[in-house]
Length: 121
Image (cartoon, rainbow, N blue to C red; front, side):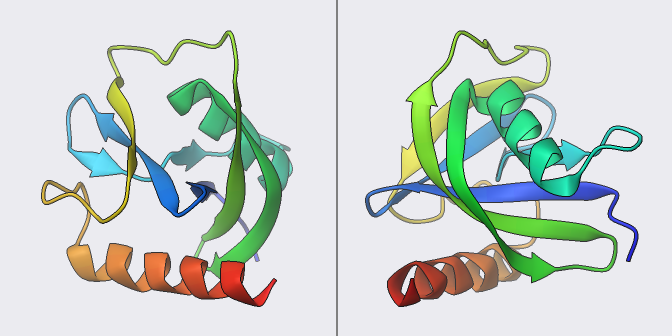
């Protein structure tokens, strides 16, 4: 399987972190892998670049057609500042916000799977 993108659903307690993209809406942090980059390293890098936080205990939640979705735990704030031309806001949520970049059904399914995996580990 060729992996070209990754994204992360990261929790702090019962809340999960999302980013509001400057040209879209709310979404999970992630993006494209750099050439030759390992998916887990790319997921951690994209998360840090888009949120300014570390992410720990990454584990694969789902394989998509050409991407991977990871579940992780929110780590400490870093010195990395998200690019304001790409990321307008970073926030923790209890529930999905109304204004989403991608279809609600995708987010509902992935968030439910992430919560279930957290309970079983």
